[in-house]
Figure 1 (cartoon, helix red, strand yellow):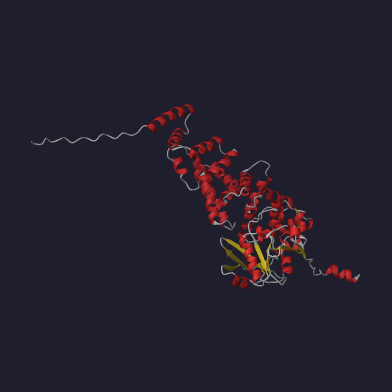
Figure 2 (tube, rainbow, N blue to C red):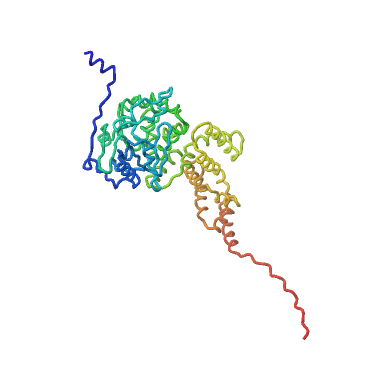
Length: 455
C-alpha cells in the first residue's frame, strides 16, 4: 500500500522502449534524402560518431511528403562537428547548433540533448540548454512523437522511442511527456500543434489538447521575432486555411500577437474576405511549387485594419491619398513598437497599399507612370482581390487588366477615353487610332539660292 502511494507521489523515471524499424517496415530509401543530408550523416559516421536524419523530414517521408529540409542529430559536440566539416558555423544561444553548408544546401546539425538541469525564466520557459546527452535522452526532449524518429540511411533503419511510427499511421498528434509542463517550457509548441494538426490532418490527442487553452496566454511573453517566425511557417505551410480553423478548435485565444488576431478574425468570418482569398491563392501556389510573396500575404492580412482607418479618415474630411498615408503611418507606429515584422516585408506592404488609390487615375500620363512602378504587379493583384470582394468596381480591375497587356496605341487610346461617356469614348477611340497612325511631317528645308558661275 505504501509502495503504491509512493509511486503516485514521486514520478518515476520512465525507461523508454527502443524500437528499430527496418526497410520492410518504413520503406524509406537513402535516395529519398537530399545529397547534402546523406553526405553529412555518412561523414559523421565515418568519423566515428552516431548520426541520424531526425524530426519532420522522417515524418514527412513516412507520409509520402517531400521534405523541405533535413535536420541531423548526432552525439558529436558542436566543436567536433565543426572539425569534421570545414564549411560550417556554430550558431544559437539557447542551444548551440551547427550549420553545415554542402553546395547550395545548409544542413542543421544538433547534438543529442541531455536531461540535465536547464536555465528557465520566471514563466518556466527554457532560456539556456547547452546540456548534451544520449540518443534516448534526446528523444525525451523532443516535442511530439511524430517528430522523435531517427533515420539511419547507412543501415536503412528507423529508431523509435515513443511509438511515433504508429501515431503517424493513425494520424495522431501526441505530446511527449506531460503536455502542460512541455507547453510551459516552450509555449511556441502550441503554435506547432496548430500548424501540424492543420497541415497534416492529424487529430490532437486528448492529453495533448487539454492544457492548450490555459497555456496559450504564455505566448504573450515570447519574443515577437520568434512568434513571427512561427506565424510565417503557418502561413506558408501550404495549408494555411486548415491551420486557421485549428485555432478555434484547439482553444487558442486571441490577443497573443496582432497578426494572429487578424488571422483569427478573418477565419471566423462567414463571408469570403481578402485574408482568406489571399491565403487560398497562396496555398494553391505553394502546392504547385510556385513562388509566393511574403509582403503581399502580410499586406492582405493587415488590410482590413488599414482599410478601416482609411475609411474613417476619409469620413472626417481627408482626401483619399492623404487619408491612406495617415492610416498606414498609424499602423506603422504600432508595428514598430514590437510586432517582429522585418523591414523588407513592411516596405513591400506599404508600397502595395500606397498604390491602391493610384488605380483610379486612368487619364493622361498617370496610368503610364503607375505601370512603370516596381510594385505594380503586386498592387494590381491586390486590386483584383479587392474587386472580387466588391471594395472597388470590377470594371476598374478589368480596365487595368487590358491596359497592362495592350500595345502602345491602344494604351494611348484608353488613357484618352477613360472617364468619358461611352459614346464619346467610342468616337474618340476611332479618332485616336487614326491620329496615332498619322506620321508627323517635317517642315521642308528652304533651299539656298544658286549663285551663277562665270563661264
